[in-house]
Image (cartoon, rainbow, N blue to C red):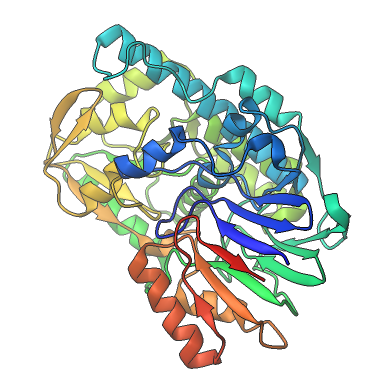
Length: 452
């Protein structure tokens, strides 16, 4: 009898790992890092309940860190199978994993040199060699075409929107069809294509990031303009922590639309994230994975100054002229954006603008909840800047859009499993599925085993 076990993203929006067992085969769907609260981050250092060398293959729905960031550790600990994903996801994950390894090595070195780690010496979870070995394990899978998996199973990928290459995963194994939504994107997004419906499934595993919320219907481009214009009128700078893959490209496109309409022409925009710059270039490599014609995207990128060198990034932090700085990471958990927050947060003229979901325990979440100081690299930084949020710019489907995606099923599944959400969001979506669709639904606990 096949079984499903959630090894992550159960009661939280990070650490996505779902173990599907059928016969003697073990398949892992997604393999992400836990982020946010310390007790979650510590799970990254705990051994998995299953031996990595006993996992036959991994299916990756998309390349965000909370879905792919644990892969190098899995490989270091003995996983030697193939990683199945779209070609675009492979390319995105390569950027993400190299950057993650670099940052972990850098953070460990910084902690050792400044002595603020409780561990002596501080070590990275994995290094760049682990990341490179992992990247070589990828096996690109085409959309809409069955791919063989170990143990006689098959995989079929469909577009999920969200970010470049993101897909839902249909797995036929042990006489059952199990569909994993991955992260569902927005409908009518200006950059990404719509999520594709799934016609039938015996079981569905669906994310619930915004399972209890509806995104505002306010024009996100106008809302973005309003934040920038009032900040510039104060003589301030807007710092935008943004996910390097997905939100950065949408922000660049939105700012270009404003410039084309005659707005913000005298406000310089800087993209201070080498990874985001490289991720933007992937839109050219995968033109059929998004809506933007080449000429539009080239014009949008041409209106932004890309910053690659560390010294140029430091100069941005030192400059007090009004401007927009877009920099990773999206939840302000690491990367160059921390230096910009440290530089601009103390001044009331500036704005810290968040445009995506902020997981519990992250610096971004704490700032949105009203924290008036934040700890960066061992120092407490006062926060006098305006802290703003544009949730309508999120790449995640809201509750209505999740229900719309589920409604594409032409017959009721045996059960829906609700993951990748904080408890209130997951429970709200469970209640709505049972009330509006009449389908049985459950919110798995960490490491809970379900017989299918």
